[in-house]
Length: 261
Image (cartoon, rainbow, N blue to C red; front, top):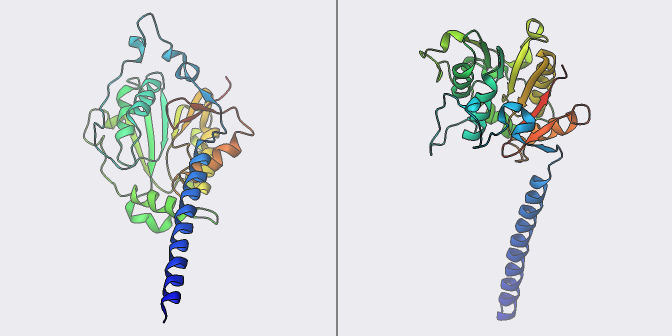
């Protein structure tokens, strides 16, 4: 092989590497722009619920809650501290609460701890022994499925053995098999944070909408576009927005809907 051919191969190789680098940068740029696109309009905490209206010195004692921060720990399947606080505040006025997606039970604990003494919290998770019953459908992302199964490993939870455990009803089942008939028009607060696969978000949402009582609040977690992870949430809620008055709560990944009274 002569020198000219060697130089030619080197130049072609460098061009290929450069094109690949530019291509990756373009893909990253496009994805970052898509992530910024928020279809559902924002609302403030005050618009979410009047309890968040500040007084002369900021947020009032009405928003004081029992709270355990994550600190600087990374805990699988948990919400941000701000989001956990918002849920805790809303729980103070909720007598019947339902949660799709228990995971570690930290959020379940906060909902039960801050709800009225006579409140009940029902939460649902896929039991570890039934992972093979996860009902993925065509169009669901495999990454979302892996995340859901990775979070369905617990039979003992953060709330287990605590003072609030008697307020909590733990359901072990695939949410697609859940019959919501007994909960129709009865829930004050519903939190949807189960599998983020598109078909599951759709299924959980349809059931939650039936379960929500007039004046009740429904919250979905993880409204942002992370390909494969939360894409199903983003897609399902953008579609639902065409039919329902949804709002994206500022500073959070929550989308909310309040059922007309």
